[in-house]
Amino acid sequence: DLQSPGAVMGDGGFAEIGNTIRRRFEDYEVEGELVPRSEIGNTDSNNGKSNSSSKRHTLLRAKYDDEDVVLKMFVMSDSSQRKGLERELSILGPLRNDAIIAPTAMVDGASSDDVDQALRKMAVYIEFPYYKAGNFNDWSSVEHKPWELQGISRQILYALLFIHDHHVVHNQIHPSNILMTNDGRIVLSNFSA
Image (cartoon, rainbow, N blue to C red; front, side):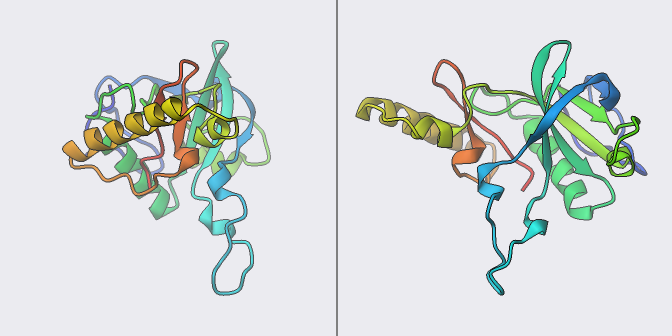
């Protein structure tokens, strides 16, 4: 379980957090970068140009022991990403609910020879399950019966009630942060904002 973020960060690394599973980036087979739909086409309202700094985290689709996972990268030299990691760990540690994404491991930065080697060495990753059914954007692109929409809406509201009962405000509720399981359940993700 991920616990308190109190001793999360040292200089470029992180301390043990409860009984967290620790892994190394080089033990993963990275299949590519996932780009959240909410991050595509963001523009700076001042000049209408694309705002590349709006993309806060890199999400990588990867395999670990033939299991599909997502690695969320936090660059430790970036203070906002460091704070985002601390926030995500402090929130997800005590929140245990099927409708809330659960981290499965902490991953130390890469040591392989690739273009982003220096950046990835300064990074920490949280491993999350990969949801093959996608997110609410994907689910809503197909026509559904009214009772199905009501059921999904009810699940979202219950998940929000649960986190609010634990004094957590999500701040980023939008379709790409509502993941879908194969059996039609929702899972809230992205608590680092």
